[in-house]
Amino acid sequence: MIKKAVLPVAGLGTRFLPASKATPKEMLPIIDKPLVQYAVEEAINAGINEIIFITSPEKNSIKKHFNKNEEIESKLIKSGKKDMVKKLNPEIFSDITFYYINQEMQNGLGDAVLHAESIIKNEDFAVLLPDDLFFSKRSCLSQLIDIYDNKKSSVIAVNKIDKENIHKYGVIKPGNISDKFINIQDIVEKPSFEDAPSDIAVCGRYVLTSSIFNHLKCTDFDKNGEIQLTDAIRSLIKEEEVLACLYEGEKFDCGSKEGFVHATIALALRDESISEDIKKIIKEII
Ligand code: G1P
Image (cartoon, rainbow, N blue to C red; front, side):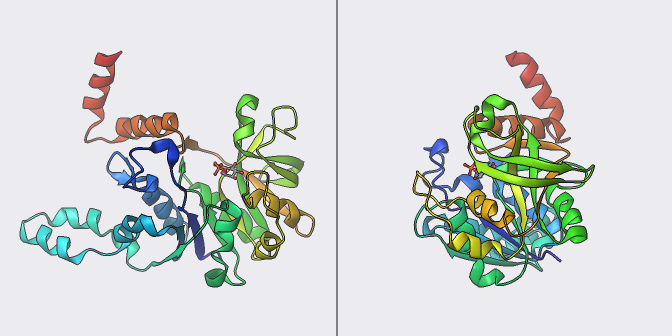
């Protein structure tokens, strides 16, 4: 059973400066909910009950956000706004343990995941990159866990990408392909167009066996001085089966401004309380 999830949130968020100067990028809202909360809800709805943020000391507002705020709760109740309490202190958070571990140096995604070892120990676990926002009937993480429950192997979410954007992602070399999953033969981090082994890119959800920690410890820094999770997975493949799940559903890359705005527009058009007004506004602008 996958009960623990790691959410790396220590990045500087430079693409969103100046917005990310005093507010962590992960706390910027898509409509009225911070980006990171979408990934947290996805994790909880997939059965996770311990969430480990790999964060930095400046990002205290993330901790504040997931803590229960009893003071505002009682103010809301006193002023007759009881219905807002479920937005302030969502019930689904009440049984969850949140951990906050500081990643002192910007040493990459692999290093961030390795920081969670002291809490995860020898359990298999999930990793969710909050920049990637997914919407589907069965959530992306649940799709991975379905395969994990059956195979007990690491499973990575992947999707097909236009080849000209392949250099932004981890890319798999597929082996056997069944209707449920793909056997990964090899994986490379951000290859050039020419070197990419396929057009199947890693998106930000993983279920990993705990053996990944040993591989992370042996992974060298890359040319940018980062320890890549992809490189550790590459090494894991030599010892264990690693599978990919072709994710079925929508994905927004909220790590880029275009993706962030795209997600905001798409969600606004689905939000019954504002969609009609938003449609009018869009028509006027066009
Ligand atoms: C990370 C991973 C990459 C993956 C991507 C998905 O890259 O290193 O393999 O494809 O997330 O969003 P980043 O976007 O953090 O540079």
